[in-house]
Image 1: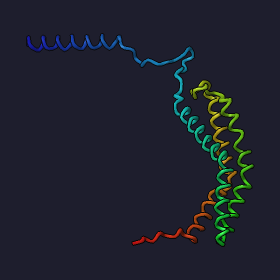
Image 2 (image 1 turned 120 degrees about the vertical axis):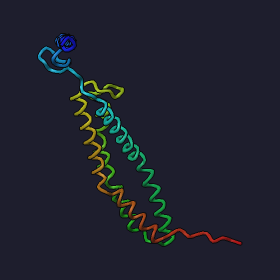
Image 3 (image 1 turned 180 degrees about the vertical axis):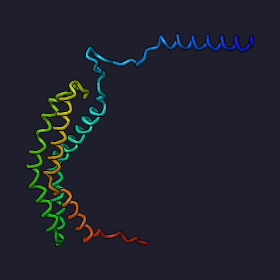
Image 4 (image 1 turned 180 degrees about the horizontal axis):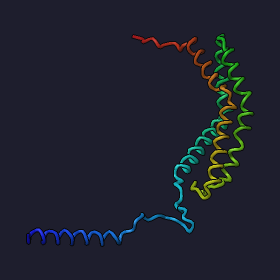
Length: 181
């Protein structure tokens, strides 16, 4: 009987210590609540910053292609002229080149607004960090639309030129060198 009473007292003491220890713990976890109970945690802007950087890189590649378009068109025209001198039919390649040349002003017109968007970089600082999330989202969407409009302005003419050149090369393969012994 004595052992049961001692055991019971020890169990009661452990339970009492646990109850008192748990009484001092808060019932709900800590939160970053403001005066009205709203959270004040800032959203993670790293994804938006990466999107902005990627869009600027895409826009720059488009700018480079447009800047080099005149040189590219001249080189292709030179190759067409050389093929014509050999008496080869270059009408498909010439038509595709003419179509590409014709859309370049429209492509440039669709591309130009992007420079102003990047220059103003509303919602972003000069380093590409978000300063105003709402403005930054609108800015990124605007630049994405310019990129999309520029791509659609090409109207598939670049792809058509590549396919015409590929068909021309298949019809006129380069001569293979014969080994001389």
